[in-house]
Length: 347
Image: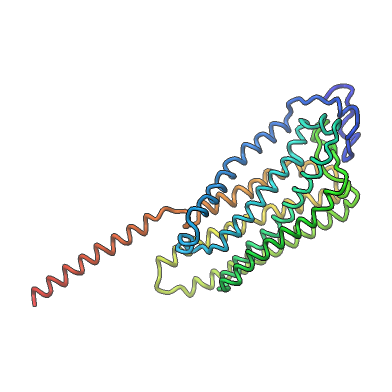
């Protein structure tokens, strides 16, 4: 930061468009840039795993999934949920993390790229609302399957609820397109020139946005926690009623544990979102620290869900055990035939 530059708190949470000190700002490498670069590198394995899951879906379809205790509707809901989680993560990079490195500060302050700012903010809120509600949909579908819901009911949840959620999210985010875009200076520990994008619509209705955000994330968290409790109780109840198919039961149990763990991991970003909303509502100083640290939790959740699901669910395992079973059946069949032949000879 040059000696002519004002301290960051001079324009904290104010638009810096047209401010000479920001127009003349020269990017220099800083700790926020390093942190953002590490964040970006750390997303690559998670995205690669998600793309492997998508590839598996297109190559195998419903046949192998059904044979391994996974409904096609569950898989589709998972893919859709994780798609929007990844979109939300990348729009977060564009809206907050990359601008906070100061690399776009001079361009934004001098050129005032309204269309770019408004489009990024619109996509961010669209994906944020979608991912919150699609996460709940995924958990609802899991409960519906445990209660032996019909195929028609499951398809309605995926094929009707999901498009409706995405459409409602578009409508909720649309006002940002028709509002003025802003480049806003972040507070300490961010350096001078660290900005994020938002719109006048958000800043003019800040309390309403914060309360709505808090209400949405708290409601989703409570619903997911309740659904998890109900699901665990139902799984335990079903385990007490397990009958003769021991191997199939063990196989389905692994599938249940994979889906249960996936659902539990989903709660983490909801709690982080609530902390962000509380920080924005009660303590502006604390908000910058939450914004700085939240990628560690939010990104971890996105990648951990994909990695945990891919590594633990039996549908992704190679079918070596089934070959072993069929070979055993062949051996046992041959032995039975030999015993019968020997018995006939003795007779």
